[in-house]
Length: 235
Ligand SMILES: *[C@@H]1O[C@H](CO)[C@@H](O)[C@H](O)[C@H]1NC(C)=O
Image (tube, rainbow, N blue to C red; front, side, top):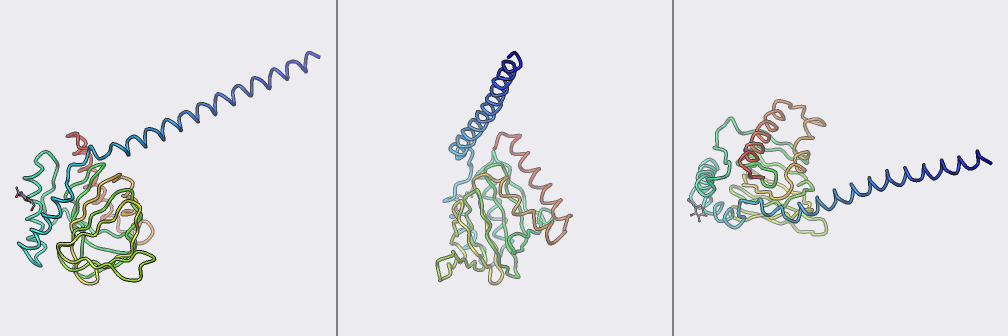
């Protein structure tokens, strides 16, 4: 009689522990989801760059330095440095260029700005390249400076064609096949959760290129810029 009683007590206690443990986990999960949704809702407060201004700037670079990517880049970076004095903008030096392999495509990249919610880069190659755009957690504006970018969305049987001065806007979640048929350079602006985009740009090192010096430099420059911006309260 007494053993029966104590085992029933034991079961009630076990149930109590189980209830507390899972109740706590559920609570943490709900708080985490609510926090992430809230952050996602307010992330625009940390945006500094204006897609309209960037578009005008890309167009003025195209008309001032037609077919001259070096001239355009200097034009763009000089303007950004003056327009956004409180934000970290990188000067264009040969040392800051790195290769980028992602989604089957390859090109050279120069990081103008990188923070938690925005990045601004020059990406392109005079050789042409083609691949998968990647599925991203940010809106991506691809302002063509030199050459053409072609793109395809499944379901559409015709290609989208972007020429210098136009922009290929890829909203968060949109995926496309893209092709820089011949030489093409673009100013790329992404706004959203940038750290979640980085694995797409890094993974090819491990599965294909094994170009660890490039990975090292990409991570070094990105981390330096992100932390540098965090340090001046640019999230
Ligand atoms: C930067 O470019 C924009 C767009 O072309 C232009 O409106 C603005 O005046 C330029 N600013 C500077 C400081 O050159």
